[in-house]
Length: 307
Image 1: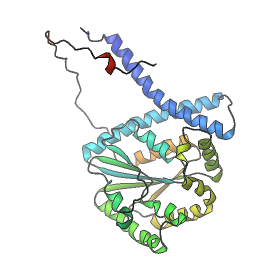
Image 2: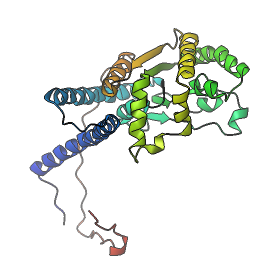
Image 3: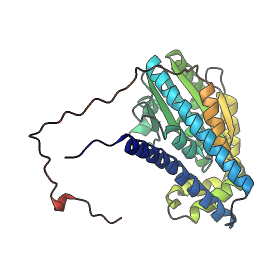
Image 4: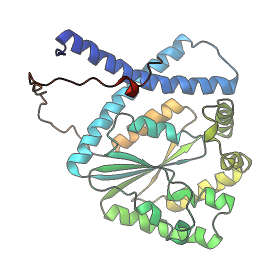
């Protein structure tokens, strides 16, 4: 019969679980560093200053993620509704910050909407229709990894919409976002800004890493060719859709780590959340019956122990 673990064993397991959670974040950061080194052709060891900056980054990231858990509890408690849009050039770091925001949160409360290109049916719908179905109910946060602003960016630059459709988008989007605000949805819009040189380096990193080559699409490669057209489209978009009910916030993102911390700290500051009191949780004793005998699992059903 399996005996319950001792207090020392429980403490050891809790410690190991905490380290494992930190290792998950460290693994992603090491992956980022590998890409940076590959792009720059360097493999130099980290200096003391680098190590100190890295330590500060992790310390602040874990602190902010703790605040995100409090925000999540507050959103559920108050039935608040939040939509956060992440826009920016390809390889600007949108996915990285979304990953850090959602990493410790409940996917039933905080979910990501990353819509593919519209299909034939969706192209005949009202432009905003396919996004509406992803909007939050009370007690939910939805993060859009790209959004309805595709029309003002890639669709405009690549010629996927007509001039009339483009102008209609700018007439409609302020009213659409005001409607969201009146319905009680808080809308935050972030543009991640990187330089030409930084995007070039990040694309090289993806090219040289077989685990990340899938991130490079023909559309991404075209974005290098049409850098200036994308810049003009972005400037027009920010100018024509920056409204009091849903202003744009620009995140300087050449430094990925600082961009993540700054974005998370900023979005936390946009909501009057506070820690929600929960009743203490106590683990009930497991009920045991003398006549119960656990049946062994047949060998052919067990996953081979390769590691």
